[in-house]
Length: 453
Image (tube, rainbow, N blue to C red; front, side, top):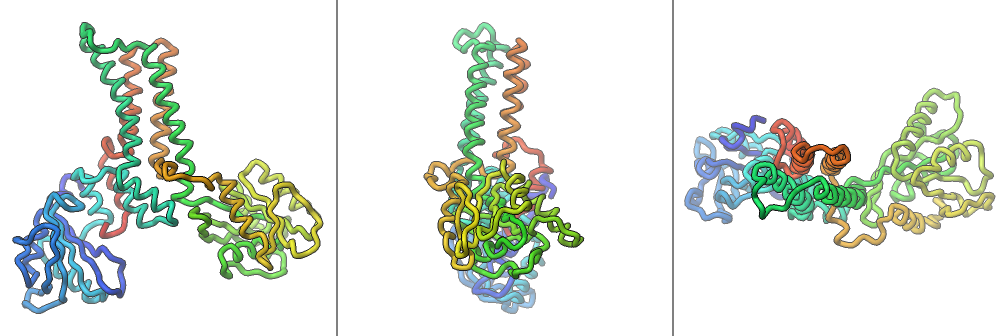
């Protein structure tokens, strides 16, 4: 997408999901949007319509034949999502009629929009910052109510304020350094020395570390928790998956090794999303296919953020059980003793006792999951932190740049050299909200958006 030309033409796209429905909405944006659509609209003169009005009429073709009866919403610049003239046409929700209306629109001086181009224009026109733009897609893809709350905070600029606050503190230090260098005789400005910069930099690093610490929860809420269900064959891993999901996702038999590969599923517990992986039973096997499954299971254990280790309470611990206990001892795990409806032969401290057959203990397991993830007592204030991996990584980079400042102070570097790393930290934080970002990276980010957004 060429940003030098992006704002000079008018674009259009279907903004609702493709298929048959009650209505379809076609969005048009650009300086000529109202004038061009008025050429194919039979009804009120749209060029004279007030902003934020809905106008009844018909879309017609070049032969003056009616294509569809429509409602046309008019948004006059800059009071629109893109800060440009915007038209939204609500057609009947048939596939053919929607495509016919779009074809007629594209026969005008209007081109088909690229994915995310409406949001990109809103960003380039200063209508929203980059955090808000990303929050739009977060709202669309939110997996639970908490994730939706986080996305709305981002859209409402609450998340951006966290970054602006850090940048303002950095800017104050940088500005004072510049004044000290350029105007050493200016008595009203605080004398900036290494002794002054050091505590301010240390305080900023602490703020960033706290932000990163709190952002762990919001990232988990937004993206979900990678959760691996592990255990030796035939302990009830697939039965547990099916019980948690309340559906027959995995094949369950009494034959060891039935699950030969990992199975993925998504589950919401208390507004927290678990990205579940039901792994193949880990054991020594000569079966080539099962060996691949075991290898993938071990990989899933390494990558998981939460381990649900299932043991068969009706049997004594085996070598495979002990191997899994060792493999997962340093992981965030919950030990589950399944088949409590049978005679209990093993005990394990802090384990959750369940029966996938009778569903006994399943509620206790769900409570334990939330408790282990330390997400049971979240307040509204806990949601306004960073949840986007890109944002979190940028704060980490900005913090590392400030550590370079402290190293420079310890090495008695002059303050003009320290200002370079301070400015770098300020610029990195600016990349989060989009105040200092390369055009190619902006295009890449918005290309991941839905068409029509």
